[in-house]
Length: 148
Image 1 (cartoon, helix red, strand yellow):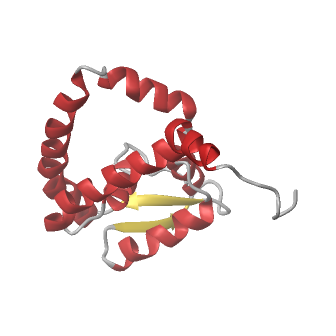
Image 2: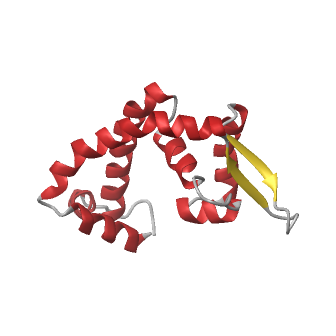
């Protein structure tokens, strides 16, 4: 395709109005900004909250399991873990049965951070759910899970 071929403005409008990827990205950014603001007093971003919450399990999960849950590659997850490790919210340890695997441990400080952030998270959802009520929030969640 040549850079000289015309790209009609109507195509731009079509993409703007119909592109699922664009609309999901815009919604994700808007939600992240909203929750970042709500979670700021607890000292967490929305991404950190999700990551820490994914570690709240009976047994510490592997990096791979968390990366899959959060739809992140392992390199990105590792980079996102670093500041949480420095703050003492997460500890990375070697799996006792398979030394090649690493497990992510939510520390007592990490659990306390989640507990402190939870009311803001609940308030955020309480404000959003009524907006989506007529659009069936549970259906939206199911549809988004299907896409992931």
